[in-house]
Length: 134
Image 1 (tube, rainbow, N blue to C red):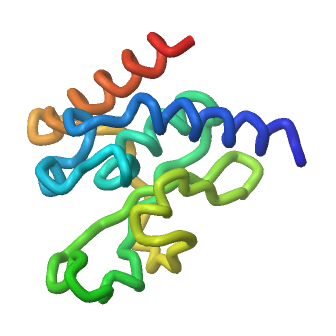
Image 2 (image 1 turned 90 degrees about the vertical axis):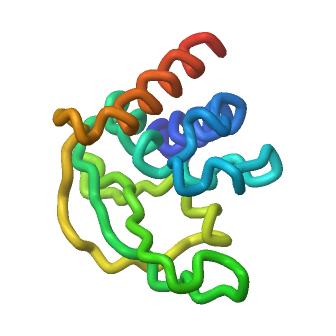
């Protein structure tokens, strides 16, 4: 196991304690629960990973969202990371039941417009919660 893998695993464990209803995407606010903490956390989590490891934020659509009673019919985007060494990292794939094949739509940046205020607010809250766990 590489040092980078160890660091990512440790980060995931800390994220599990830091994620909350307030850091989840508004679409999933009322579905979020401690038993499924990564639900709706992909964008803010990918930004945290980018802060620590660099690289790009990838956005795409999960291919496996036809699970009965779960996300059916909704248009869902998913965000994950491409690290500088070419490794793709998705610390929230378990919200879809594990490793999720994705159709890449593009590379995005951190939110900088007023329209992205909610994502930026959730990101800053998650970042503060993580720092408090140190």
